[in-house]
Figure 1 (cartoon, helix red, strand yellow):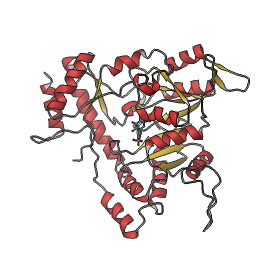
Figure 2: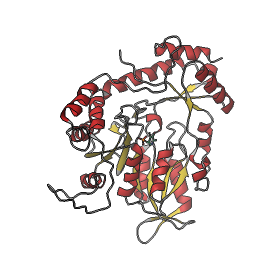
Figure 3: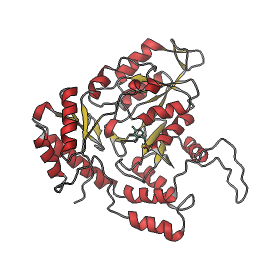
Figure 4: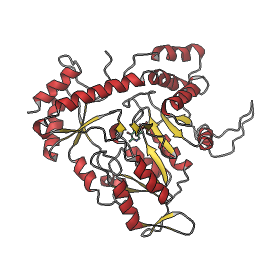
Length: 385
Ligand SMILES: *Cc1c(COP(=O)(O)O)cnc(C)c1O
């Protein structure tokens, strides 16, 4: 019954007989080989070389962040974000149940506890209304100026909204609520490189914004991540602790903090530089594909709706998402498309349903549960003409 949709997608991606349309394949159409060869020719494949610095400066110019610091994955960008904003063991961190596991893993690495707040139906990301309601019912600011959960007695240190599939959350409202409750804002911008909220890049609103360059993201370094800062001093400290916290010296090995070997190798950064040069046309192509889907789904065929970018935002449309009318239809659609040469997948299992987080607090998660039963991602790769 979903034959027409399958045909539309296969035509859009010009798929040949027997060829499967992937969800998101990387595109290498620029200086990737040239820069990688440069690394090998100069032997600078690892911790020495010019591409790491260049990638950071290029990302600062692209996003408008004061400081960008690369690391080896989006997950450790999130881990370091927790550490750098002062999240401590036994603190609580407010986030979404509707997210990729890495968000919650990063909270757990610190020994902190995630609390799951509901999402908005249009952004699929953290709801400022749900956030405020939960805080009013569960939190208070104590004499030390910090926010505490009145039931558990734990400090609530940070809030981590995630820009689902590249669609920005309501950053202004969330940011105001965080300021009012003295909670640090960390953006999980892993999926939203190049997405704008009111004309400004996602990842530049919080104290830290974490980006991923995994192979399935909009641009890739093979594996890699980045933190964006507005606070240059904090950015410099991030660079220091992600590179073993070594005190600069020509030959001495002196370290002044517990450090991490989270430095991105030069070859990965070389790939990143070449990919970043093409990001504008990648996003143009992704937005053209989204527009083709918008046109196709305009009449809601089979009761299916396409998830458009929220008002006031410009999404990178990392992964296009559609809303099936029910869980039964979601399953049928997944089965039919995957059987017929079009790769699709459901949204992630909600975090509160995973064994590690089944006892975590949540606010009922009405919208999250509704979306989890209906959302499916459809092919979204860049097309280079
Ligand atoms: C991809 C992703 C990450 C993690 O990135 P890695 O580079 O794979 O570690 C974190 N959060 C979200 C929401 C992601 O989609």
